[in-house]
Image (cartoon, rainbow, N blue to C red; front, side):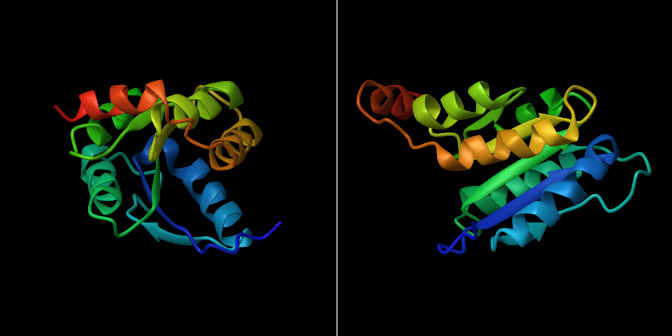
Length: 148
């Protein structure tokens, strides 16, 4: 199933998420999405904010529709992404957490931990997140409160 909307994704990772970033990039491209890769570009040790914050900014500024950030656990990456105004980054560890991140929190960025989940699970998380829709309703007010 190829995407016809041509949504653009920002990817950012440190060394501990590099392998999955490459697999995710291949998956997204094969589905017809556009990808902006903010790095890192190897498994050499780096500081995750250097790569995650520009990816999150690309989403915040409307240059990309969605973002995926990665690291060893995904925790620091989610924290870095959420420092950017307009980003709602959810740390996802399974398909249900990804679905709820979109349905209830309208997450425009997700964070994944390469050391926490398998590669197939990571791809399935992305599929679930992309297939979900924001429910609105009572969640709309809560999302607005995040920006106060």
